[in-house]
Length: 493
Image (cartoon, rainbow, N blue to C red):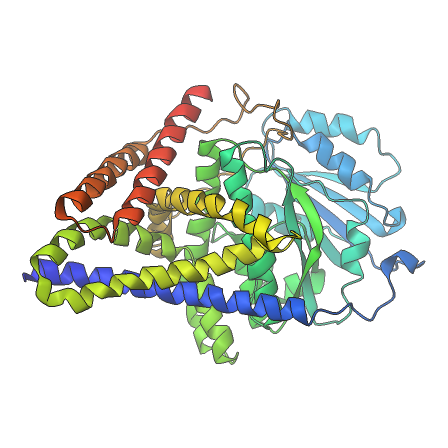
């Protein structure tokens, strides 16, 4: 065996080990989730519907940048809050450069009874983080509620969340995202599949286990004192929400997750928009890991919390490991055939099966959370899970580039995800403004990788070794689908 072959096998084994350990961490969160459900109890506080006094001052911040299709419905939803108007300040943090500003000004004429500030900055310094920090200086509320432009919070959202601040050490109350257009297309359905697992199993598991969790950037409420104590909003990462979450929790603030309170939002319907969002999330997570992982490991929190924080902050690295494992799986297939003396080593590949079983438990738990029938859940779950896993692997090249840029400190601007007010099947994002082209050299490489794994499928039959065949089938489908959608949606944009 040559040195190059040995190095390749070492990298392959390290990637498999990381995927396995990450999956075991997700399995532990699944166990914590089920323990929480079994021992679940209602808070012993006065139901908010029976309260007559709401003394807390709340500032609602709405960061907006070129949102002509959704800003009007956002203002309508916020204006419908049933919280006492004399205790409510609404800030529209408007950095728009198109007709969104005019739409806002016209819409505000309908709400003269509300305390609404339409705040414009000279420069979009710091992007969303900069807008939130700029608004914070003028915020009069003890609590800060934040909503992105595509969210439609329900009228009682503020009453439900403010009632949960029962301890002065609670710095954040985060709620669950639901989806306005999950049934719009295959892409939106699979996004909902993944997000539901995060907002059901992962957030609940972290919170109930006393581990670090994150504010999700929107549909949550901060205690203003917590933001100030943690150092305010900072724009040195693309995930200012994750960054501030870790700074606050390292300062001893507690977070509370309310799975039963939901805030509906719009999912990206076009591949260009989805890739833009994924790039920002994965790169921002890598930047935050670069910034805070050392501090977390040196902190006084428990070993289990450090372990979960390690995989939480490094969760975007899973895309790099998946990509390397996938690319190396084909030469490993040939090496396995030529080096029978390493048969024991190649059996490490079965770690993927254990990892898969852990992920099945994780996603099945989320899928079954709001279903009355376990059998019906499973019937729908199996094809959805296979499709979700395939498309996720198909995005691994695109996301790996984002992750590596984050780890190596390459700075890129904050590119917001466009929203088009897509709710029903008849709604369309095509020929609208804000289109994001998704054809790039990376797209071409995704197409080539689809061909690469089709070759791997043929190699399995040639070598009569079918251990990697399901993996290569999913990879070929995943990269092929991402390539197709990238081309098709770019033509329609």
